[in-house]
Amino acid sequence: MGRAEFWELGRHRLILSLPAVDAEDLIAACEVLWQEGHRVWSVPLERLDDLAALLPVFGRRAKIGVSGVDTAADAHTAIAAGAAWLSSLFPLAELPQAAGPVPVVLGGLTPAELRQAYAAGASAVQVVPADAFGSSYARSLPSLLPEIPLLATGRLEHYQAGLWLSGGAEGVWHTDLIEPDLVVDAGLGPLRALVQRWARDD
Image (cartoon, rainbow, N blue to C red):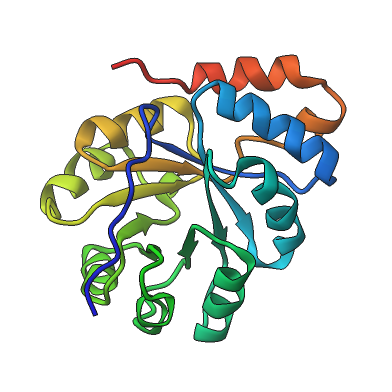
């Protein structure tokens, strides 16, 4: 089976994990994300109801994936729910096989683990937790693995994300940028300002 093609991340090269809020607040927040050009999102496997709420509104406009997929059964469940892509923190060879044409992001930490994940058939590989390393790793790792589309995943500061991207990473996956309180209690203005700060025009 061939490797599923990994789609373009868009001009901001950013994946965002969505917060655990009710459907009405989530849809409103995602409309802001979409308007600001952030159109690749993830929900955890245990919140497939969020995916069900989002797909009728954004299914043709955004790439919504499911994270925490660690078994073939998980993969089948997420795909049946409508996931556009799947991810695991681990280099699990069975997931790309189970996913078929659906892109899979596998995880690793060391160069050996990242190579293992890509050899297993991952469409892209996430370095996780990318925020655990200093600037030298961000600058050097992508050049050591030029054939692998790398995602820097974690609770990254803005400058850290920039280091990974300038070093050659395919993109950044921020797992905690959008806190639930920012969506529920603060209105949409602060959310818009936050994601505008993470926009890239280069």
